[in-house]
Length: 141
Image 1 (cartoon, rainbow, N blue to C red):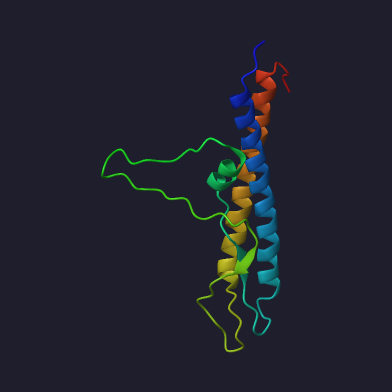
Image 2: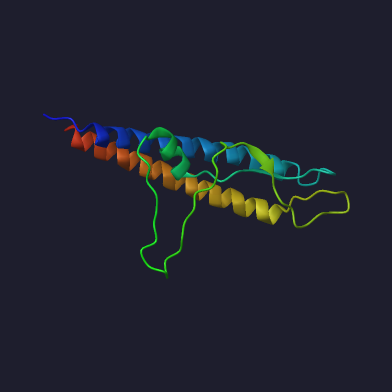
């Protein structure tokens, strides 16, 4: 049986990216919970994480560079953002109470729900990817 290193590396890189995305969602859930818990704390400013990008993660793992190009003038041009890791950052609050608190419970709960749904999606993709790899190796789960 001949091994295909590029496919193996890409599969492992994909699983690594999915794992990092799940960690990102877990860290974000913690920050969003802090925001909700401090919704009435005077002077508290909500925090959030910088968006996680698969492109940056895959680029850091791979020596091959994959870029998008526009083939027609009507296509959107996609440019990757600078990767500086993920960590807490101040969230922009549009509503500020007289006490100086900038946390909107409605906005935070919408973020929590979206984060949970995204986490569930990523875990489902991860589970299916592992199942596909097991099937390819001849080990049915």
